[in-house]
Image (tube, rainbow, N blue to C red):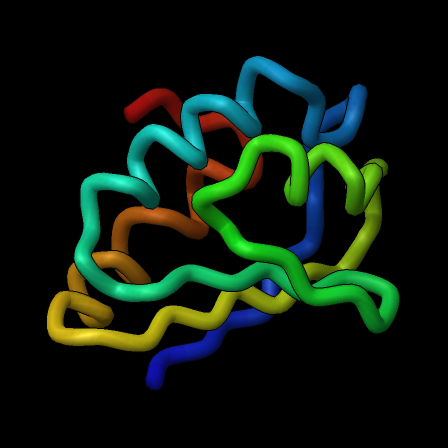
Length: 86
């Protein structure tokens, strides 16, 4: 299991476009991906789950990855939470 804490820096928060890019990239990994914010944990491969978190600027998020390719996933996914393109 790999975890990392990230602060959302996007001016508009994590809205639909960057969330959909994150989900698309997370879904390429075999590992399970979870996001936790404000005591709520969601499946990181679920666009509805991520949008439900309503991640606004300054929100602290924990990214947790579990599985056979977790190391590659934990390297790739954090930057996507702040709007990096895949």
